[in-house]
Amino acid sequence: MTDAADFRALSELLTGEPSLDQATADAHRTRLAAHYPAALPRLIDAYRTASGQPDPGAALFAAVNAGPELARIARETLAIWYTAQFTRPDNTQAGPATPGLYREGLVWQAIRAYPISAAPMPGTYGHWAQHP
Image (cartoon, rainbow, N blue to C red; front, top):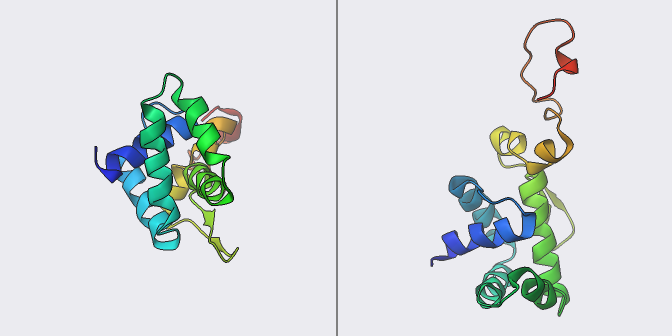
């Protein structure tokens, strides 16, 4: 598989979401790779090794927890999928790249809410009482 396909598969394993969008995965991978050029390929390699194990989740968990560099990039990968933002190695925040990626963050599904400041306004009184 390619790094792009493996990053999406890795992300699906980390997030527990079975069908992540490839274009979104590509955008997230590009942003993370720009700030974690050595760590991200190592995480993808750890995923490739883990994917051949009887319990890929447990194998990846063990690999990620074996060192702080892999643990950090795994956390940032989760953060970017859920919130479209992440923390750079210098501990500054990298906000969402686009409003669309912000709206697509997995956090909104998880909490069953509209994206703050980005929800469509149906125009009827009481629309907030309807589940997204």
